[in-house]
Length: 252
Image 1 (tube, one colour):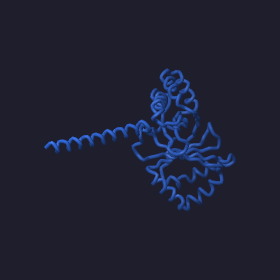
Image 2 (cartoon, helix red, strand yellow):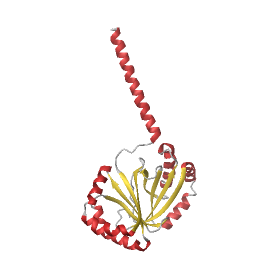
Image 3 (tube, one colour):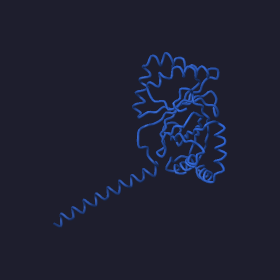
Image 4 (cartoon, one colour):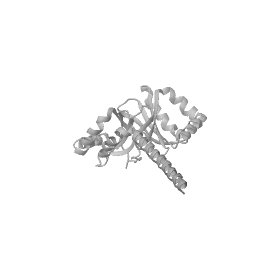
């Protein structure tokens, strides 16, 4: 009987040890990475730089042939850059997994209509291309605007360390801008491939003038000022682009 009790106590001790170790590992993971993405969906950001003399032709060709591309995967939005960059288009594609994207790219490479009618004509019009893989932050979802308008893509390069370091402060700065109705928040995206520790915030406004008025009002709000002051302690740089949705953009 004594031997059985000792064996039982030892087993309980070992089980408790592994439970504590597991809890410790999970805690360290949470501290090191911050909130985790709970699904595989990601968004590919693409920026194309167009030869100045080909800008109109590129937009016209894309308007006519974009259906060949959207037949393969979901387009979230397609914009031309009005301020913050010249002769650029920016678009966002949604994928359920990396395997899906790989399948889409393979199918496009074998699509004769896509290659002959679009790629062969569009590529000579460009000077360069760039892409970035992003995830929606866990505390945000895509919120479509109520009507047509303009968009602002605000990009923040944060200090190394990830959301575990600056996530709460950044979230507070964004939500204080969105909650009082100063801006319509479309989505917040955290980089996975590309420049790391980068966050993109996509805003919607009725017009550029409405954006200017909203920002002027927000800058007089003590809550916004306090949240921004906290967030900028983790900020390395930032930039902004005003985007005009194309006729074929799902987000208008």
